[in-house]
Image: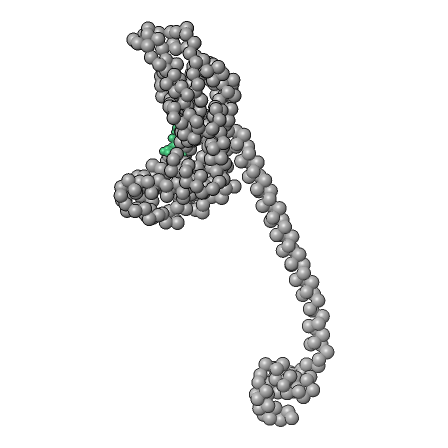
Length: 395
Ligand SMILES: Nc1ncnc2c1ncn2[C@@H]1O[C@H](COP(=O)(O)OP(=O)(O)OP(=O)(O)O)[C@@H](O)[C@H]1O
Ligand SMILES: [Mg+2]
């Protein structure tokens, strides 16, 4: 993905990321946006489901029409249907006048159904109908209305589990899942942390009219190792808080520590975690994704074991080669000592001068009187050898 596309996603839609996982998601967004496919976005809280939904809308031909975001979990069950599909006057107690629902308002545009996992099963049936035929009835009306709305749904629930429990309709799930975008937790893409920090810090600094100068490496490493249960939202809040309260445009480890919980678990302050050490299976939104991660980790481990085995074999080979050399050297070493008639100095003859004399005389003989070779073998200069020869009358 080229830099200009990344810049566009950042400046137009507030979408930042450089990790392979996010780049892949950006590619999907660009591909799916111009189509009319419904999209299901899943991921832990704060992973960017709403930003992605918004980007898809803005990149589509529907961008001139409304993007309506409805939080299915925040509206009381009784109200949700009338909010979505509208009602006629007197349709229920309190329906004093006729009212359009969000689906009518969103006509030709996009409807973002957030927390779809919270939608009551009765409403799900009506939603399925709109998705399949574009048709619906306002509450209290028999008139069939037709709309052209693209639906993007999001949830941090595992919908398969909800289906199993009977709280989510399988047919609706497949309808929504025309295209499924799974946003990975921040801890699975630590490569994105530096760029996100810069993005949030720069924005806050420019709002405050100060210059952003950066974050120190040790502070960054701590942030890269955190678990980020609240994902990008949590990181954003932290950076914004630090910049606003410190007002100095840079983040050091001392500053950072003031804003982090005092007792950090040990894994937090150590080395940044490697990709393979991140196995967020239990919290992964999709079981299949979890299995993929386990599988990949196992494959990586297998590769590591193979590499280690190779290294051990190589070492063994080297050790073998070394011991052979030692054995080969031995007889030669003995040979020199045994056959060269090295002087045997013992008893009262043993003093330094005698030893020196004997050794010089022995070496001279060995090199047949050649003084240069003798001096070299003894490690002394020719001049010294000359002096010693005179001193010991060795001629
Ligand atoms: N890739 C990203 N680049 C820049 N900002 C991001 C990114 N992802 C998320 N954010 C920011 O993090 C915050 C949370 O994002 P968003 O509301 O889209 O998360 P969510 O997945 O919808 O969370 P929830 O499940 O709690 O509703 C927002 O302020 C958003 O701008
Ligand atoms: Mg959201």
